Length: 114
Length: 114
DNA sequence: CTGACTGTTCGACGAATATCTTACAGTCCG
DNA sequence: CGGACTGTAAGATATTCGTCGAACAGTCAG
Image (cartoon, rainbow over all chains, first blue to last red; front, side):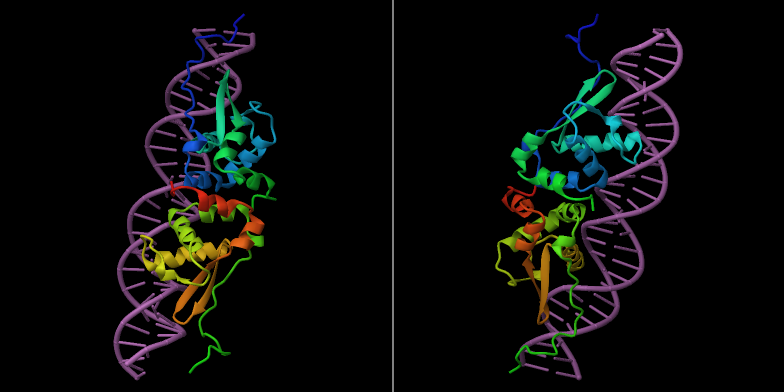
C-alpha cells in the first residue's frame, strides 16, 4: 500500500509562471494560436485536474503538444501537476482573470476559432 | 481656393475590415506585436484623425510601418483616411469594443509592453 | 525486471512574418 | 512643371515559430 506520501515524484516539476508576472505581449502571443485556443477551450469545459495532456483532441503530435503546454504555462494560463505517469492540467482562471480581466472570457465566449 | 470637393483623391482607398467580421484569432494576432501595441497606444492618446502614419515614434522603417497599419486595418482596429499627401488614422475604439469588449482597455491599461 | 504508456528534449525542416532597400505613385507648394 | 514629402508595392533576407521524428526519462502493471 503506497500512500502518495513524501519522497514524491522523481520527475522535474513543471516550471510555472505567476500570471502577475506575465506581460500583455506574452499573454496575447500565447493566445494567438489556433491549437492553444482549442486547448484552453477544452480545458475550460472540464473540471480541474481531470485532463491529462494527451487527452486533448488537437491535430498535432505529442512533441508539439508538449511545446504548446509549455507556452501556456509560461503565460500563466495553465497549471500542471504530475499524477502517476500522466501530467494533469488546470486552467488558472481566477488568477489569470485577476491579471487580465475579461481576456479569458472573451476567448471562451467567442464563436469559432476564426 | 480649392475646397476639398467632389472628384476626391485619385489614390487607392485603404481597405478596411469591419470589426464584426474579425475572428478572435485575427484580433489577438494583430495585437501580439510590440510595434503594433505601441502604435495603438499612441493612437489612443491622440484625437481622431490627427495622426498621420509617419508621425509615430516606432523603431522601424516606413515600409514596415505601412505593413503594420495594414494588419491593424485588417483586424478592424484602425481606420484610415487620405488627407492630402498624408494618411491620417483613427482608433476604432467603440466598434472594436463592441466586438471584443474589454480587449482594448486591457491593452491600454497595462503597464509597459512587457 | 520488463514492457506499455506518458510526456519532455533535441535537432531539423518549412512556413509565416518582420524587416530593409529600392522603386513607384499620389499630393502639394513654389 | 519640378521638387519635397508621404505612403504603398515588390523583391530579398533573416528571424521566429510551429511541427515532426527520434531518443530519452519517469511511472506503473504484471
